[in-house]
Image 1 (cartoon, rainbow, N blue to C red):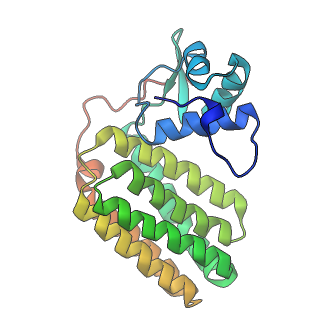
Image 2 (cartoon, rainbow, N blue to C red; image 1 turned 180 degrees about the horizontal axis):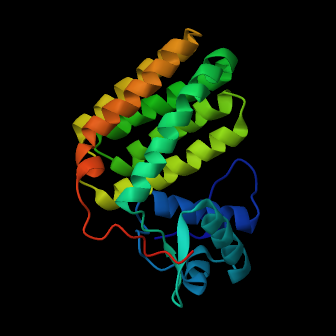
Image 3 (cartoon, rainbow, N blue to C red; image 1 turned 180 degrees about the vertical axis):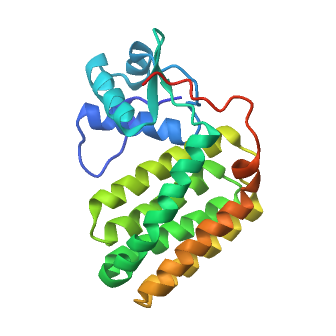
Amino acid sequence: MLKPISSLIVARAPTYREAAYAAIKEAILTGRIGPGQALIEERLATMLDISRTPVREALAILEHEGLIAPVYRRGLYVRKISRAQFVELFEANEMIEPAIARRAALRATEEDFAAMEEAINRGIERAAENDIAGFLRSGREFHELMGHSSGNLSLAQFINRNEERVDLYLLSYGKAVDQQGMEASNREHTAIFKALVDRDPEAAARLVVYHAQATRERWATLFNEDEEDDQSTDEE
């Protein structure tokens, strides 16, 4: 499930806490550690071949970010996102991202554009391979890069954390994400990207709204269906 920290190849040597955080988060956001699954410090430390202290610190960060949560007297678990929470997260991003897109169209650098284009291309490749987790990650990267290029890092971080929890819900749901939907989403990302490159803030904002509306249409069952138990199991 997790590779030893010593096997990780990184651009710079991370602290054990940073490496543990990255490894556990990656496992969660690729579905290798699923919603409702327990996160046991000793077991994670053994798999990562490090002590328990950096694992404990990494779990504290992930709890703060909302990807994991305590369950009463049972320890920490990968968070189960309810349908109601999913809808709220999506709506929050839908309200904020047009403003981010406007700013990004005016502020993004050529390096930002190159990174966004790479993320879109990865999304196209992952969709062709029907790699849902890889596709979702490329989408998060595109939205995160657009957020950072806007120059408002607080809003960018807010959007990114929401995207992560939305994707956590989608990974647990599974059937909502199909190849046709992935291809459509990549086309919409490409259109947003073109508006950013053209330095057209209103077009970028409009296309972000269209992307959100089109996504709602593709995932209509997630927004409209009744859920038997729409209460989170988290103890917060």
